[in-house]
Image 1 (cartoon, rainbow, N blue to C red):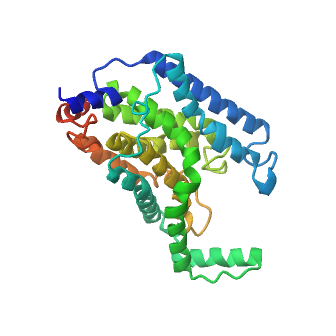
Image 2 (cartoon, helix red, strand yellow):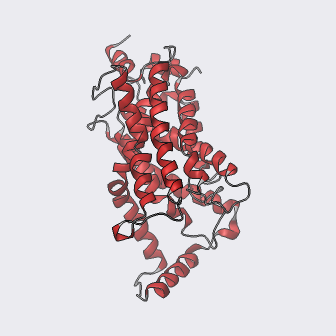
Length: 335
């Protein structure tokens, strides 16, 4: 085995190793305990439609969601390392900042492209929902009527401004919260599942990520509760979505041997998902889309996943020092 391959194995492990069941158990136990206990507090305070409001009109549930709920996986990561004497090496925790630039670009702009593509697929499937620029014009008119302030932007200019704001502001405003998730799911759980083979590990960690969302989905997060089959269909849809999204975020993590491109990617998803809804003529059944957590809106993400599952050597550069050496790429492709 080359020195690069050995370094990659130290960071990610490799297919054929034994699962570290105790560490996985501690990570999952702490993660779900912290996050689901936070969900119980949100529910007790009135869920997402009530509860106390903080200064500046910020709902307390939003602070709890972006704080202890989303940081549950990070706490689980640290607890597993501390309780099993695993150590806190920067490389093993995937905290490298200086890494190859393509994963950063993929994490930054890839989600925006896939979100818009998912919206396009949704409107092709449900053409009656697509209002084009007329829907944006109606949105602006409603905003002017509610605020009494004229908005000096054409619908096309408003759309361009929204996209520009998403590109610039989403990583800045959302990365602190999304780090809490990514430091757990992509920097700890995914490498620990490497013995399953990378395709299976990517899929399984996406399923676990989706199940972790269940308490807030049951309270109406992402989909509301007004759709047929609520909340059960929403619980299923969230798992499907997180598999697709998780494979992409796992890909940029493996590609870079760093959690930070995934942090940026997750921040972009959270900050730009609503762009797909700007063209709707009426409130859609969000279980299907047009956002990336909808069963139709997530389809482009699964197209990317399908390509990666066929070309497993694309998960990481050959000879890069990760598990993407020729030997490890071949073994990772045999699930």
